[in-house]
Image (cartoon, rainbow, N blue to C red; front, side, top):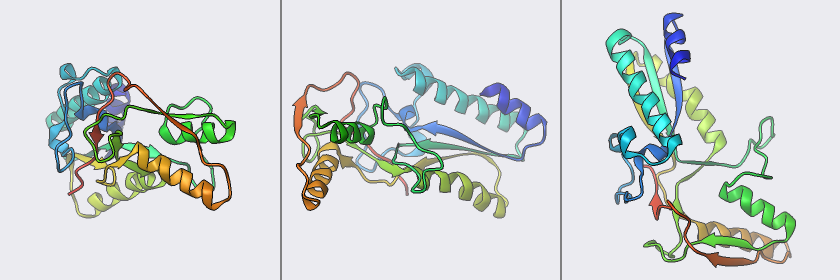
Length: 212
């Protein structure tokens, strides 16, 4: 990634968007602030336990330094996704649900297979005791990629900038599951069967974006 970034700058690319992640905010002992994670709260790579998060944060730091030292007139955006979900409505691109650990993909598999859906943990310090996340539709993510650089370029802005890509709202796993069951009942279908299991290692109680 860093090599590609260097080549792009050397070839005169004026605006670059890097797909980063909200995992740069969390480690095992992290608690989500009441107002959500602000862009200034990213941890240093050595504080992150997840290798994916370490790599994302390391690239961010490298890009910021290179831009500051050698290309201050360019624009670099680091977009930190929270929990992208779903597919494009016309499905030119879509995610297979066969192997994905994504909550919505897992729900889809259970519905199609008639199997029991397991909620991991019901002792979180949240409104309904299940984990809460900030879900954002992939189409909204794509709009951010296209519209944000154009907006900043139109305003003549440059330098390294970081933005959270989320809705700024925490939604629980139980809320999502209950909504699915409600929709099934409306369609006259047998609602999804649910059981509870233990928390998974590394699961956080609540993660959502500060979008102020």
